[in-house]
Image 1 (cartoon, rainbow over the protein chains, first blue to last red):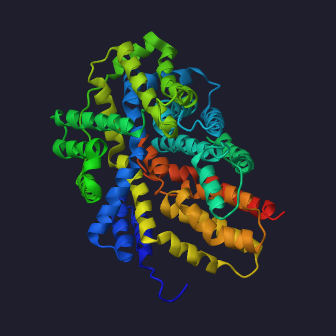
Image 2: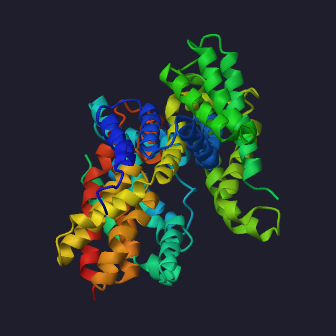
Image 3: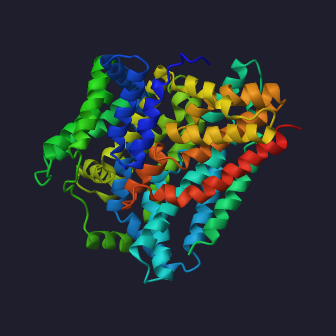
Length: 219
Length: 313
């Protein structure tokens, strides 16, 4: 590293940090950061616009899962959320803690089998899990505040994330395992995906214990 | 062969349906802007190939400008009433859960079966295609079973899409920012700076710099995949593996998981942290991050200890 290194491309990172700290609109923050880093690296305005456009177009697959919204909407129209609520209201054994513990185990196991898309925020959390834990919380404490209800719904979303993140790396063909394998290969180190994925198992167990403990203590 | 192009066409048509339904919704307070927002996304999917890089860039700027001026906002998509839904639950009971199994079921079956149909389906995209197929089948089953007006598939989707709002394009835009950062060489600079943070010869300090860097850089990029090559190339391989004799398998595999802890803490990881808050209609945009930070910190400590304890056997 010499004194001549150009640090201006880091401007984008600074813009991201400041933008999120100020709770500015994230879309505006991202565009500003792209210009900050791009111009900092010596690109022209039109080059930054083109780089952003090219990447946005190539990354369309990120938005494909929105396809399921009509399905979720139609199920809600038929009364799915109401049925989820009334089932839980009648089943006293299904506390918010137990529902989320069960969901966490299910999410980790299916993700470990490579089935990352069988559950998720639009597919399962919004139509099923969130209304169920909310109904269980209201049944067990009718005086519950709106704030606590929102907290417990946020915990349902958090449980989906934790289960997915610390389950998926056990699967051999998941993108992150293939990325590690490819990177090490580029450095002349040949490893098999199985060697990498067994090292995800201790963390998966620890995640279930840590997050499960938090769920078990959930009021 | 069925692959991404067909899936993109289907997605584009869904967004185009929302644009049309918004235009017809006279009670929508900002219906032109909202229709332009959904229509712009639809155009990206349907005809974006012909825009060129600069044209697509202008489309991105237009979408962001529309979002900042209040698009897509909320209209009045037609839906069922509370008494109607109560009648349905009384009539069908727990059978209402069955359609919820279609999308997961097709995703599961398709992942195993589609690759065996010869060259019919692009083998690299089996999961996404199964998801799209599941959505089509489930929509058909729901329309036949409950016989809502045919427009319900569009209107119910729009109701949820308006609930998520402009956050719908945030994950795709953030992925694009990662690409712009790569063009600008952000990763190279961070990778060159990172080793300077390590005191000479201390194994624990080196491990902390590696897992800490993974978590921190993942938070900034919103994605552990972007952080991994930078930190592995900057600290993991040269310091932990080459200089200190660490096992590259443990360093790589557990280092990635340390990055995932950063994902749990970052608003940049929009589809995991910001979009769900919108989907669940939570009043605090950061509610999901607040719910998961204790788990994330504990798991980061665990992963750091794993590398420290097991990579140097």
